[in-house]
Image (cartoon, rainbow, N blue to C red; front, side):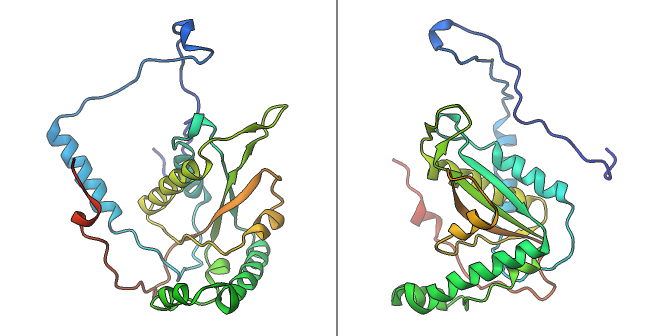
Length: 242
């Protein structure tokens, strides 16, 4: 495929086959499933593990441009995540306009300055201190893109608003898909959560049923980017077989 051509992936339209009426109004289709050999399964599981354990949270970004098609494909991946009752209670806003990024940075730094100065507990600040973070958020302007992820507390796509289910769980899973897709594409990201985040809803003019969930700068790391030397919990600490 010509690398200069945009690859279109239609990930929402599945061919459906009507089945027994007892299953309600939902249409069903036969699952397309390719059974692998155990060796192939092991190989693929190791490959994904080796890829994802190299992912790091980065705060030092390059302003080098990134084709927006890459970001769009990452969001399509996130949009394929499972959700409660398939409500898909999420929306994504890609911010690339420098003026809007600056506005977001100013608002975020105002909240962060209040957080570091007054809102955070002593214990919280002690936990953050080892990472050397403060209220300055230069990355919100430097990164070529900000992906703002919103959760939809109600479904307003129909005439009458309807409840969404397991919203935080659903959006959290989609966020994991998004971070994995960004890393897989050769980019870095940061999960930023200034609190409160209502300013994002206001700046980006989002509807009343949406609440900001994550603010994610995305791009290449700066040439001099550094990350803290950290370790993850051992496998035995997070794993049990019963």
